Amino acid sequence: MGCSASKSTLIDGQKLEDDIHNKFGPKKVSTHDLSTPKSSRSRKSSASSSSSHGSVKSSKKKPTLVTKEMIVEFQSTSHIIQRLERKKTHNLLESALKKQTEILNDLKLTEQQHVDLQAKTKKEHEDVVSLKEMKDSSSVSQYFGSTEHFDQQLSKEEEEYIEAKTEEENCHKKLLELREQQTKINAQVETLTTDQQQITALYEQQDQTLDGIFEGKYGSDLEQQLEDECDEIGDKLERVELIKQQWSRAEASADAATRQLDYGCKRWQDVMKINNASYAQVRMQAMTETRNYLLAAQGNLVSVQRLVKPVQVPYCNVDETNTLGKAINFIFIDAMSHDRQHHALNVYRTTQQRSVMLLRWVTAVRTNKIAEDSSQLRAQNTEVNKKLRTERIRLMTEKVKEQTGQSIDIVEEDDDDDDDADVIKSALVIEAAGIDESEGLQDRIKEATDKKTDAGDADETGESMIAAATGDDDDDKPKSLDELAPQPTKNELFGDLDSIMAEYKNQQHSLVNEQDAGRARQQSDLQEKLKRRRSRKMKKTALENTTTSS
Image (cartoon, one colour):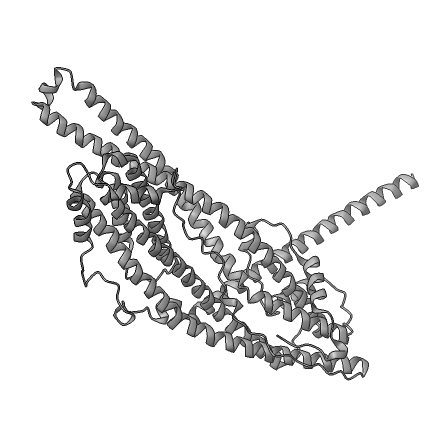
């Protein structure tokens, strides 16, 4: 990776890396500092800063004496920078900050929903209690006409209470999951911020070295041209790599959702098979576990929708995940009726099959569209970086000969462009919450499903219902790759990269100008303050002279 000296000029790269790490990082900072523009590989911003500082400084810097050791250190710093760049720290941090904001917004919304649902559950419970208190009073016939009518109304109110209570519990579980995710993402942001600080410090060190050697200018027109090309390709690569990372995380979330839906469907089939009243507690545990897995799957599918935006998913879209959410809210009511069990299983199973297609579609887009562009840009980026390093080393060696008359030879090594860049940090997939007394649950379920009801209708109400619900349906079966929905175009995935990069550069240029203007104002304020201080001192001196002469 990068250039390295001949054997006579090699230094201990690990020792240098340790020294740099001790010197430049890590430092504790606030994430609010991350709103500043991203550190650039180019020296345009530093050149601009130098010119603005030059307006207030009258002294001229002495030219830097270029040495062999300085060149070797520059090479090693470049080596470390590129190795750190492969970790995609900036992209990971940008993605983590986005996720952090999403979680914070979801938390605020879910906390308010939970408060509202608690009030709704309380009201539904009061309605049930009120009706039960009326049962033995004369008002029953007055309001309902008959006991049968009253029982129907009571049953309806009880269902509404169960639905409200289930919805409240589901919301509470989502709230707990969001708080856990917030803890994880905050830790990720803190770690990535430290990593970003280290590479930013290395960029600054490299800029200072180049500015010192070339006196704040470019060493040659070729260096400037290669740097411009390097910035352009690097910005495009960073954009593509960010999209690739988002889709890789979407793939992980879709995979988790598919597995959770599959488990939820199987556990719901166990619920349908348990008909012996002696195993009511086991049945309730199976229902609760089904609910937890379906909730986690729904959350992961929603994550996929967000991660691939602005592309719209062709499977498990917002309407489908909302339908799944409503089915989850009715899960304990659905368990009471054979017909509703059948309908619920169809909903879960259809969503599971479409999640399989979603996973295949996301994987196909990532490998066929995004990875190809990423690989091409990475190769271009490696090539132009190597050319830029070669030109800078050539210019530095010329400086050494010009200043000292000494000729030195620097040997370059090939770039170690491995696949470590593809390693994606934890996608923060949502895991299903556990249930109480889960140990040995599978054995208890097996025992319960082996028992027949007293009426001997287990086959009719359990196995036969499952067979009917899981019958062959070619329309619902996962499709082959050729039959999947069309993949998005590159414009839909990346946007117009040239226009986006142009706008990005304008934004960065504006931010740098604002910073320079701010520094200029600070210098102006300082000069004014010094002027006032000198004026006060002169007045004081004049007063003392007058007093003395008197």
